[in-house]
Amino acid sequence: MNNHWHEQIQRHMNGQSSAEESAALCEALKRDADLRALYLDYMNLDAALGEMAEAEATAVFGAGAPETTKPAQPLLGWHRWLWLAPSAASAALVILFCVIAEHRAASPSRPDIGELTSSVRTAISRLRPDMPPPIPAWMSPTAVLLKEPGHPY
Amino acid sequence: MPHLENQLEDKFRFLFAEHEPALRAFVRALLPTANDASEVTQEVAVVLWQKFGDFDASRDFRKWAFGVARYEVLAFLRDKGRDRHVFDADLVNKLADEADEAGPRHEAQRDALEDCLKKLPEARRALVLAAYAKGIRMDELAERRGQSAMSLYKALHRIRQSLLECVERTITRESLV
Image 1 (cartoon, rainbow over the protein chains, first blue to last red):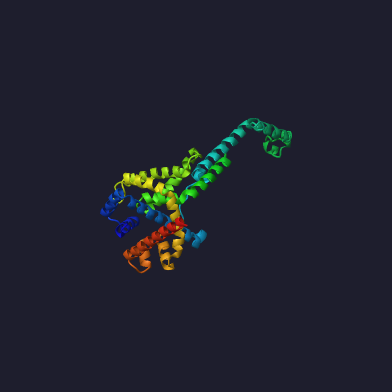
Image 2: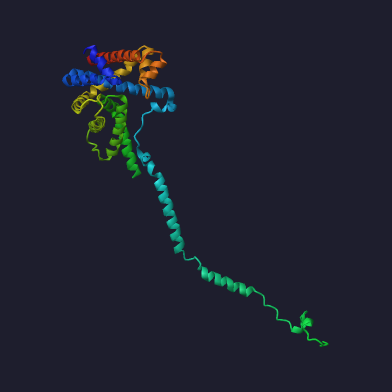
């Protein structure tokens, strides 16, 4: 294969080809099986070099490799449900409130408010000491003021 | 149930890791840029995992994965149909068939490449690995090295061509042995 096609394939790989060069390469690839084999070899080389550079960067930087050197991983296992976490937490809270409310409504030891206040009033009235009997009018300190004029006691 | 899901995930991870280099190379062969290939390979990985529950274990995982990858590449190219650098679907399908057939040869090339890379003079080896680092921009790399982008590309072309020749020599020698 002549150097022209090595050059053209690599320009295409680099994204340097003009539209005309790409069209010419496309037509040549359709016609020539050997050129397709060379093209596939270059692409295989390109992919393998990308992986080797990535492995080298990981070896140099280790866990602290720059983000651009790490391939994005498909979301596997529980990670792919991570987006459900906020919704699940909200649902759990709603269910918890419902259960508590139901438990309170069904509880047999819950006292009746009306009965409770009535019994408290009764208890208070029982504890209230009896009022002393009213004193006779004459014992009142103000009785003298009420006496009729001319009365000598 | 979580136990079964873990088993399924472990099986998927094992199979995917085994075939990932071939899958990456396959997708790369069908797309014009490395960034496009990386994006589509990720998409393929997600689709494979989503459909893995339906995968018949008696089938060949590689063939199944390549089928999914071809479909994803064609969908991607349809979306980018106006890009004049993109090959048409006929050629992409032809390349996909031949890349599939060339699987064992490409695997041997990848194995041989490690030794060929080690044989390169250190400066050339460092250059090619720097050029393939993820997220690198060639104009920035050229500036950092104090050379023009054009001369950098030319240097890379020579290195790649020599690597490809070294790989072919290695495979030929090994097949003779």
